[in-house]
Amino acid sequence: MRARVQALESVLLRQRAVATVLADDAVMLQALRDPSALNRERVSLKLDRLRNQTDSAVIYLLDSQGVAIAASNWDEATSFIGENYSFRDYFSEALLKGEATQFAMGTVSHRPGLYLSHDLRETPVLAEGQGAALGVIVVKVEFDPLERNWRSAHARTEVQDALGQVILSSDPALRFQPAPVPGAAEIVTEAAVPGTDWVLRVTGSTRPALVAGLMATGTAGFGLTLLGIGAGFALRARRRAARKAEAERRYRIDLQRAVDDRTRALSDEMRERRALEKRLDRLRAEMVQANKLAALGQITAGVAHEVNQPLATIRLLAENGEALLAAGETLDVAGNLGSIRRMADRIARITDQLRGFARKANGQVGPVALRDAFEVALLLTAAPREAQGIALDRPDIPPDLRVRAETVALEQILVNLLQNAQEALAGTPEPRITVSIQPGAPLRITVSDNGPGLTPEMYEQLFTPFLTSKPRGMGLGLVISQDLARSFGGNLHALPPQPGQGATFVLELPSAE
Image (cartoon, rainbow, N blue to C red; front, side):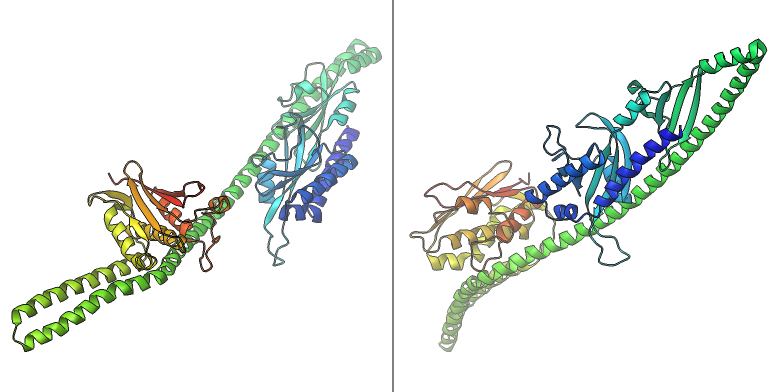
């Protein structure tokens, strides 16, 4: 019995040492920080050599998502590389507790084994802190040599876990089954396996003992021998029951502790995630506003042009009114005052629209009159368009046509699309922008230009943040516009580039009906 326990303990200690040493290995850590093909290949070759030296079944490295990036069986048909093991307890518990042990059936190899895992972490900045988890190293141990040795003996040998389930046995048919009840002619010897909650159990026949008793003492002696064996059975049964009850109690305590630890970890993770989501929402709102203010720099010149025209008219009408008053023609003065009032109303409308565009969106999604939003966008982009001599083909939008959106956000999307089209037409002869509307669910607004169009490379990266072909652009206009459209159930995309055609963008908006 002692020899069996020591042999099993030796295997466990050797394989645990492998996982512990690899957890601090510089080559493993580098591959997790930079999982390039070269680094992953170096790790796989190293694990393969180590497996041969330590008699491990397989050794593999998981990233922080549970995906195997390197494995000792890298060159086999059943290679673990690319497999996701995040569902395994040995992965989640190693990230939570630092190390873990799990006996299970292999999902790829379909062979049972013991999985020993250890986390790999960055070196913490503070001595008392804990570095970020980079991944988990896993060593799988299979016990075929031990079980073969057990089969050569006359007694049946098996190992049970804390729940009394057989995980190793000289009889393979007993694996993953409840421990068998000893027969009347069997005697059981048990011993705990150090460092585990396992019990090694050897079951032998009592027949040799009975025959020896009968030969030595005769019938009376045999009766005493039988009585002693019966008492021994009863004592062992009581001890086994007590041991099982204690193991179950420890298992329940450990399970509850693990559940509590996991619950606390999940609560902390949820709090961090909520805080991160709030920060992301705040950053998103700030980026939207930054994009809008950048657009205002171009819009302001156009607005100044729009305001200067009525101001010049007001000045002329005022001077004319003074002359009419001096001549006593009061009726004509009244006409001039009416014109001045209309010009002032026009200036107020322009400045109101500019102020409305500059304010932050309130986030309230609801029915928005599409024509009103489109007119604001046209007004705010009018001056550069007129200066470039760009012709505009625009649709006749019914005043009652409404979409589900946020007013300021929709205006910002339309302004971005018109500005992009106008900038793309720089240097284009007979520049033209065509806007069309296709009612339906969703409603589609198409903005096209007859400029040089998009290259395939530009098309692939259109909605990638901070990538722009403009000398002074931030690379955020289209990204933010798409994000805003999606925030109220719409979308923004470009049509694939066609030779000899300009760029075409399609804005999809949900109907308010």
